[in-house]
Amino acid sequence: ETGVTQSPTHLIKTRGQQVTLRCSSQSGHNTVSWYQQALGQGPQFIFQYYREEENGRGNFPPRFSGLQFPNYSSELNVNALELDDSALYLCASSLGVDRSYEQYFGPGTRLTVT
Amino acid sequence: AQSVTQLDSHVSVSEGTPVLLRCNYSSSYSPSLFWYVQHPNKGLQLLLKYTSAATLVKGINGFEAEFKKSETSFHLTKPSAHMSDAAEYFCVGMDTGRRALTFGSGTRLQVQP
View 1 (spheres, rainbow over the protein chains, first blue to last red):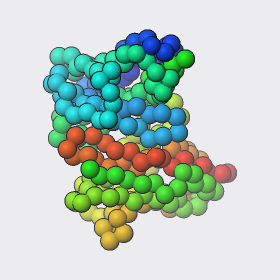
View 2 (view 1 turned 90 degrees about the vertical axis):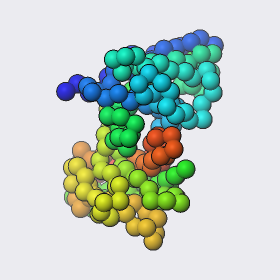
View 3 (view 1 turned 30 degrees about the vertical axis):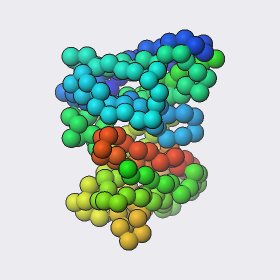
View 4 (view 1 turned 180 degrees about the horizontal axis):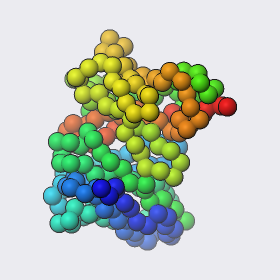
């Protein structure tokens, strides 16, 4: 059974640029959630996707957007990057929205904005 | 929405001694609560979960947590710390409306030899 994978592992961008982060769900999992973890803090919920539709969103501006594909893989897109967007971005998959209490996390993508 | 508060940002214990990581929750209804562990450069791993079936929950690697409604607490314990337990631990609640996990600020556990 393949776990959750994320790419790239590290990324450096300049303020104002756009970035796309990718996530492959654990086999059979149709629900993907994205979290932002700033240094020294707990992860904060960005949004969740279920069957290619956004299924819930945290307190993040619209420049944070996402996609989920038919194979349940997912992307997180961030436009107009700001310095405060520097963080570890975590993807988590679960076996359906009713099993969101049991999420399996990837290792994360560390984004640095300069 | 449910929130959790971790009472200690750092805890240091000696190998072989008990571990206690404290967490309080606030919720107007029966909560779903979890403990996750994050080792450096590794993904978050679920240690244990409480979903109202039993107040004492046993998890992996010898950890357990007790749900105490009267104290609104969900503290994580282990009888004997091992060096490999050194990591960041998160107490986590469930925002059932958004089906999102809400994380505490974390407790860094150090284990001294």
